[in-house]
Length: 279
Image 1: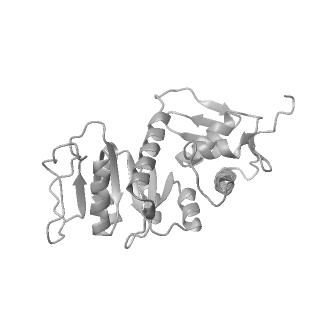
Image 2: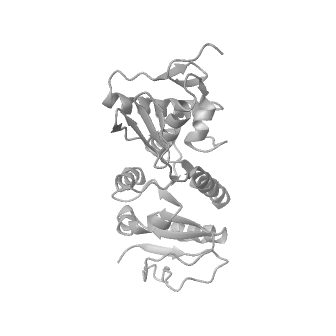
Image 3: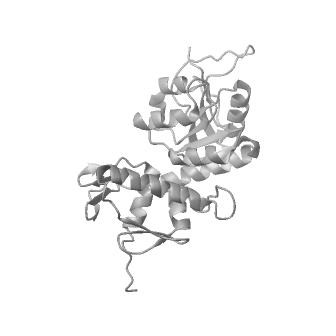
């Protein structure tokens, strides 16, 4: 029996195939279908603490979310077909056997490209940096409470939806670089670079401004969303941008050791190609 729970938004009638905790704490699973909801944000939520999982899922339902909850990574992977209709994945960091941070790359390798948000009881800077390095969109301290979690989940999903582009055969070409906006893929010399969606967004931003420097803040906003704050201090986000640029450069250099298209202007930002000094 899988450790899976379905909770529909509070405004809706209980789904006939919903799953709940019994008085003894036993999870009862009847069906894999999402509850019938109108416009609700659909969350895949993985949390091993049964009490916290049930409480947060119930509170998020009161904020209009539809939630499918899982007790561990294996339970989510066993029901991964649900990702086709989900909007966001909410992961606890400290899961048993396979941790949340190790589950994320497994999801990506399996073709799941939904935005991932980490929820943790230990909001350590090094964990935050690692989460963003692996492609997470947000990193939230459990102590912030459901109001903050709900607002940030909605913002993540709104940003992801607004970024969806209609399929198009129009590519952005800059020398060996070819960007394919409809599928968020980048190739270098006809070989896929293997960028995450966030990394692709950075390269697209830089390549769309060839010869012009793009600020740290603008790069960070496209990696997450406008106004997102992370890191230590007012300029803590710059460390996250530098880390992302380093990963991107390394991926290009695996294909082309002579790669040097990304230029840095100390304390300002980055530029694709040689900066244009004629302006």
